[in-house]
Length: 329
Ligand SMILES: Nc1ncnc2c1ncn2[C@@H]1O[C@H](COP(=O)(O)OP(=O)(O)OP(=O)(O)O)[C@@H](O)[C@H]1O
Ligand SMILES: [Mg+2]
Image 1: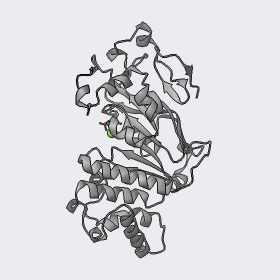
Image 2: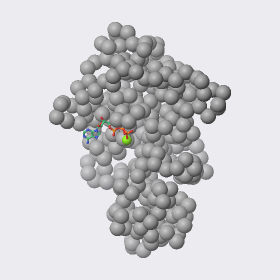
Image 3: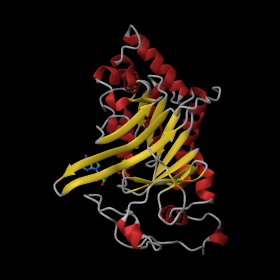
Image 4: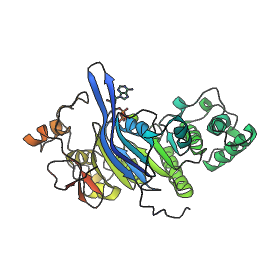
């Protein structure tokens, strides 16, 4: 296990990060002014309903998509100003694991070739043979039997395919990994295996994760802190336990009330259905984007965008009805 890193500079930070897409009807605000920070060797869970901008946030941080505005600081340096050469070096430090690794891998390559690919592209070893040798070691590391080395991904089940995706992401020895719904397509029993593997790897390699999911029970298990997104914006961000014990934003409360209750005596609990129309992310008007669905919304909520405020130690909320100190970027 790695020593705890107490570096006061977060491994990753975003300031006012924006990603807009030009669409026929105007500008779609997929990520709209997100400020977040992830300390070294910690996991930030990112949750929110489909289309709220989770994947776009992850990809913009990694510069797989070019940001419209704002900053992405990696160990204190704004990587959005990096040129191609600097970014090529930076790519080793930041990786992504997808929901369906099959969509991101070449089906005509064997398992060992897929895992060795980045090491060959980045010329990590003098010979390809050494890259294949390292790939075989990575297979051991992620619990993939070496007898699958020459198999093709379509011959393997979802759990084993995800292990290939993880081994490939680890192959360049990164510091930061965006995990974009890595277990959402897997059976529940396999989900637990993959989550445990990711947590063991984090401990062993001292990794920092941004873990994207729409499933709050998954994110609770793996995250130190959780960021709740709604239509491109952060509405609440705090410690994982704090979010479940003391949710403050009406959207977070609604999300939590919708988690299925395993305890049969609690099944009659009130589920707050979220009613009302979803605001369009295209040219959104000022005001709180959740206001049209919020039972507590007042006139000010429809008029003024609530700033993200610190309401307790590392507990941030963007809601006019919750008092706190605005966070200045
Ligand atoms: N290339 C693109 N061009 C135009 N709009 C896009 C593009 N990519 C994403 N969007 C839009 O940006 C918004 C955010 O999409 P994104 O895929 O980031 O959401 P998500 O939270 O990851 O959703 P899901 O949970 O379904 O994966 C959506 O409204 C989506 O339609
Ligand atoms: Mg997504």
